[in-house]
Amino acid sequence: MIFENEKKRLKEILRIDSVQAPPETEKPFGKGAYECLVYALDMMKKSGLTVKNVDGYCGWGEVGEGDLFGILCHLDVVPVGKGWHYPPFGATEEDGRIYARGALDDKGPFMAAFFALERLLNEGLTPKKRVRFILGCNEESGWACMDRYKETEEMPSLGFSPDADFPVINCEKGIVYHSVAYPLPSGLLSLQAGQRANMVPDEASALLSDGTILTEKGVAAHGSTPQKGENALLKLLQKLSDKFDFAKEVFSAFAEPSGKAIGLDLSDDVSGVLTHNLGTARVENEKIIFELDIRHPVSVRKEFITEILKSRLTGDVREIFFHLPLFVPENHPLVTSLLAAYNEVTGQNARPITIGGGTYARVLPCGVAFGPCFPDSSAGIHCPDEYLDLRDFEKTIDIYYRALKSLCF
View (cartoon, helix red, strand yellow):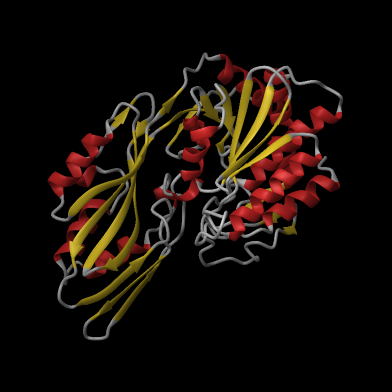
């Protein structure tokens, strides 16, 4: 059962709008992200943890002695988008769910892991390791928070990030973003779609020089699972294909997410198939600029992907962001311990899985992603009406409780 003081704090942190905003003095990712960081650090301090605010980029809270074990979470959230039936930062509770941006990505999971640690401490148990929560404020748009952490703070040698799926993710595909730029053609004044490369755009619009406005609607989804959404930008490019060569080229290359049309139908036995998401489009300096999010198998070099894109597209292709793949063997003690906690609570005999998503686990010398989404969850990370199921939340606390007790107590 979730304690009332736990639910109260959960709702309080979810009500903070922590979408990245323009920087302010000592608030590099804007007011909301900083406010969320301060809230989290104050909460941990009240529970007896030693805390540190690292220049507003990130922060940490720690308890215990010995080797350092990390739990890496992020407090920033993706932009709200449209289509919500509940206030995105209202933390509305209805029918056993709490609706809010960040409920599952990633403020809710941070709170679940913290409540698990808090319960262990409240039982009088003593950690045999230093358990450190590391909280970033820029995960959704660049990871500058973790770059700053690595400059001056101690990096745990082992840990997990509660920012993906159960049972345990021991393999994360590589991530590489590219921009593709074309000269703005005569007859087109503007093209606009998407907010982040890692979100399937649910709206797209174009303004033609004759005054015609074209719009398309889609369905948002996480960029690592583009097949779960409906890409409004691709629908618009298809409509523009009979008028503009660039639109025909981009639509033909990226109309389906497997990479087959552009020669990127790549896969391996460890991590599965490549996927891509055409996430944004904008007009800037007389150019049309697209941003493309590609999730590639661990055996594929990102440089090879760039070479293929440059050879197949007439636009100016540039790599703009990347994360190298992650892989921890299935028989590693970290993996087996976390998996045992999950299986004990759920009664399953689950095995580790691979995802296209990217988590802070990649920052660690040895780390994996661990929860919070259960198999077949429909909670809608990066989608309208993102929600946290309170029964699943309690189960998640129980899993983290057992995992931390096994690994750190």
